[in-house]
Amino acid sequence: MNPRLGVCLYTIKLDGCLNGLFTNEDTQGEIFNEICKRRLDGLPQDTLIGIYDTVYFDVDGDSHPGELTIEAHQSFQNVFQFQWRNRDGNNVFAGVGYLMSPRQVVVRYEGAT
Image (cartoon, rainbow, N blue to C red; front, side, top):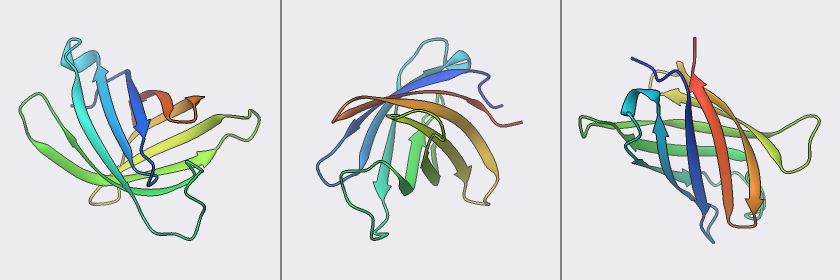
């Protein structure tokens, strides 16, 4: 079951990778981890934009590998579009993130329909 609504706080590491803490409606407020390793794509390390290999952990302790794509928002500075896909390439979550500081981004997301 996909969560209906959630939030994730990412710490942006010096190498461009992301360490996330997330919760959503299906976790009843419990906090879980996500790790996002940035692919070597030729983009500068000081941008969030890019593709990441991810793994997150759920309420049952299961790990879920996938892919995260982050793109710049078309209208707002320091705002980004997030799209998570599972290993099969199916959209799982979509969200909008705000760069709160050079090392933190907060994302509101929901399950893909």
